[in-house]
Image (cartoon, helix red, strand yellow):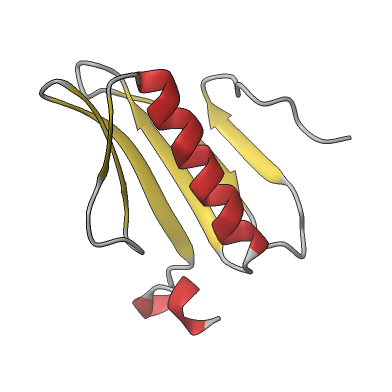
Length: 99
């Protein structure tokens, strides 16, 4: 699907989890507005869920997670449905990998 690809050859759809005043924000280039959460864990779970949906639809996605000080603490890449898996970088994943 063309809407899943970025211009200029970059193929990852980035989903970011960042701290904001009063909670956490999940942003994605495919959405007009950020999602807001009180819990960082809920924000990260939603970001991973969105990335999995993007991968299931045929696009590559990358989740980027920041801590309360806005320091990058981890990334997770989800590849298009053809590969069916995820490559983990940074902090250990909260979801166990599929066998």
